Amino acid sequence: MKSIALTAVLVVGLLAPQAGAPINAMCPVKPKQKARPNLTVVYEGQVIGLCCASCVQRFSDNPKAYVANIPEFKAPDKKPGPCSCEKCVKGFYCVDDQKELLEADLKAGLCPTCGKKPEKCEYCLKTAAGEKTPERARITYACTGCSGTGEFEHDFKHEEPCKKKTAPLKKVCSKSGTGAHVTIPK
Image (cartoon, rainbow, N blue to C red):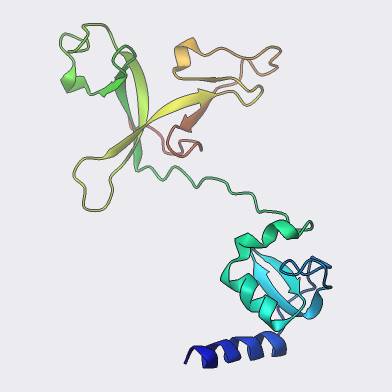
């Protein structure tokens, strides 16, 4: 059965080359052999040429082992997905204890553990399927004009020389690294 499947893959590989010309001139499995334009596979959106049917199978089985042999290959930019939060909420964060606090946790406006006043902050909130307690990711701040980042808006420091010191800071979800895209309800 395995040989029938392998034969079918090889026949399909020989009869139906992938769309477009291969990006490489030499076979990544056997780097001294020229790639044939009619023996190709698509990997991460790029057409890769190979020299023979056995190389098509070997590359298909483990492309990461051979992709380093393709100087023309450009790895796609992998950007984190959107924050996907349900909403943003206000909360508190104790810097000394490094813990998140809800307003109900505070005792007379102070951290119940250390007795100090916690920082006001914002969180991206997301409830996973089947979970009762939502997942929280603290929002941090970044400047679009310089590489400055900060934990809290009130003590944010711009890099020198920043031309956008008066522009509003970008809110960033600390979990996804992308913008916190849902506004805080009033």
